[in-house]
Image (cartoon, rainbow, N blue to C red; front, top):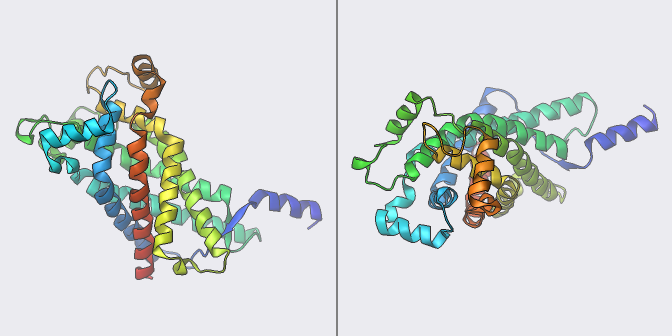
Length: 313
């Protein structure tokens, strides 16, 4: 192999981070990945649900309503329990979503490791581009599950009436009615735009920070839980900083009327109508509570995932 070929291969994979990817393949490893992701998803919902309901209401309410006004309105008319309205759908669904994204991400990492080894490149490492691709694929898979789950959650969260008088009596009732209307997957394109690129950035950031610790001579299981929590928080902040406008469009699409939606039927129409009605600032409405939410939520998600994996191993 001549020096020019060696240089081109180094450029292909650099910069890289060291990973201690497991040698174990097969069903047992997949079950561990999925179960650990589920635990991370449950932690995510329990920590993040109060923040999420405020985010959704700010994104979909007209005018210049502030986060404090939305919180005061919710407490006044719905009580403290209102912060966990619509929790059942994400509690079941987000666990599935997070287990999917972590499971696919771990499987992609092992696939790239095998590819690199077959080419004689960096036996125990992946390139940053490969880590991004792992997250991009996991985010794309996640969108299939996240779209109906988030649609149901948003419909439930926006109801201010008591369930006895509300349009949707329960999560199952809401799901059934959306299925009947053929609208359960509304917002899929916007969700896909958010999760594919978003999770590419998300896992790339996390694995880079983990790689920094591994380069200091630590094994992955020696990295403390508080560091995993901190790295997860940073990764979540990067996710939302790169994708938030897509989330606004998605929320508006899923909160709109089922028949003859006011904002349009596709991402471009909805984005244009949001801009026309509320201006450019509408695409950042609710960003501050979302960022505040992302820190504890994603910290808890990664910490729960890492700790569960260590216990299972």
